[in-house]
Image 1: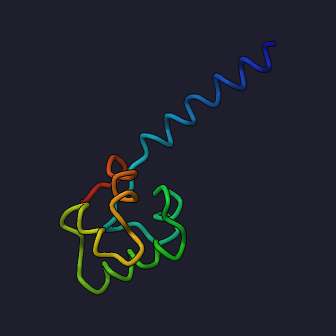
Image 2: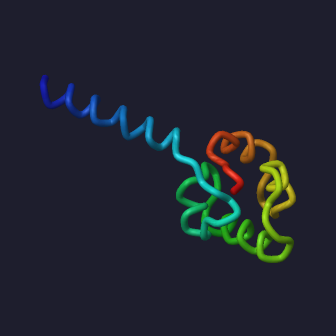
Length: 85
């Protein structure tokens, strides 16, 4: 019983940490983007980096919609995680 309770207790802070994690889409590398953004794998993460290298830094999270493979639902899923600095 104690082991089960402790497993649940330790899982909750971890889940909270993942939900509160943010990622700077102007500085993060492709691996970090793929790890931190829901629904973004390595191919999409590379597209984000490629877009940033071609057009410069993002000025708003909505600009991610211009990246191949990033749609409204992916953006909305990640809006709380995205920072621009």
